[in-house]
Image (tube, rainbow, N blue to C red):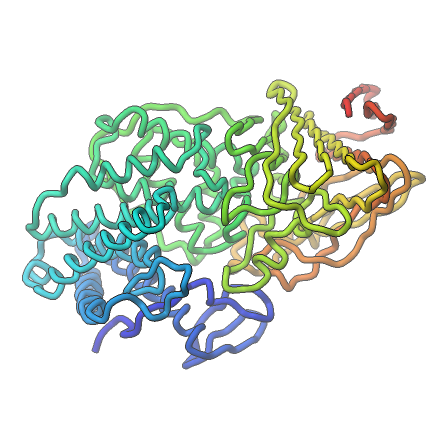
Length: 618
């Protein structure tokens, strides 16, 4: 009896509850359970489960093989060999039938999976188990395994040809994984006595790296998830190389990609889920840990210690420790290149600006770049706010792609803390960073293409203990329009009117929701923990309303109701001014705001009689 399922996998993104929008959990018989009590069945969801199960078993083979290599336990050896040979038999059988019938028209088809991308990810794990086991008799003598490795190599090569030649999409994140898988399959064949791995496999990875990574280190889509996704493929695919012998431009690009993660991390190590991708998912957390481990073999210091600690805490019992068993992935000493200094930083090419106070208690991220392709969101000039152990106003990410809320809510403007006009979403657009001062952590960015006939300008400045945010909206036709600036908290949130202004409180005391560092709840669960509070003061030019209402929180649990707000006015132009205090030891006596047609002047008096004055030209 085989130790692996005998059916091909579908598209894992279909493994989602249609009612609650969360990834499904365990299987019971022919039913698949949602944490809210839903029980689903059917071919589509079963195929999605199979896709995840095949990936999980490839990982189990890796873990068993590497444990055996470290400790020599016979049970681990037997388990790894069993999985490898059973998958060899399954792939040999399934691939004889040709390309998957489960694929949708837009997919790059696989054989064991609906998508060639999933097949490549699986193949990397499968190959790693074989290479780690080495030239043992059970593997060397298996004609089925030999045919499977040859068949996988052919599948990967043909998938890449279709992607590059027929679809002209060499920059795709698929390419990175097809290249990584092709090289590891070649290494697996070599480990069993086959031909030495040709240099063109490594060259293909390097070519993609140089094509798909922006000058500032971001993967071209500027999505945290796909940045992690592609960076991991590069590090896996370059297995067996000596960092000291890698071309300087390649090492520099890998360094910049790792530095992106260091630069955007929240104070506690949480990685903001910018644009498409999961908000909080076990599989992604494990991918981040693999980057931390492999990066530490490539560079003497990655700067990812805080990120790694947060992920290990967050995984809890789901942490299987694979990344601790990857020693020797690269040969030779790591490169001695220091990581980026953590602080405020502008990514001019991707368009993100990270504002960080000097004591690393708050991070603000302004989205002021290109749309980001198929994984981009309609969120130009959105401002995301993170604290130490709390996500006050985070990028919401998206649920599994098989759920309609990915496009109908989470990719839309309504899900993000930015401006919409007349109730319409923004369109695919680019913003421009027009002023940037790292010394004062101040940025101004503008877009004139996100909403037709509308100019949006946002200035954000982060001082120690205070963040000032000024959004200015101008309608080119001079006519009144309904302008709304979204506030999208992910914590307990309250608003009260104070004269002609408003006061807001974000996540004060117990009851704030989210996924704080140290929480050992299963991914997607709500947690409660005392978190740092954020206090806000808000003013607008002209008459406006700050409307508090129920909305959705981050995409790890779309069905959870969250208090959100829309700051609304009807006018040909409007200025929205917010001041946020995140220093629990500082007391503000007063804030005075003066808004004219040409400038905003904000004067802040603290209890210690220190007064600061901030001016923003409109």
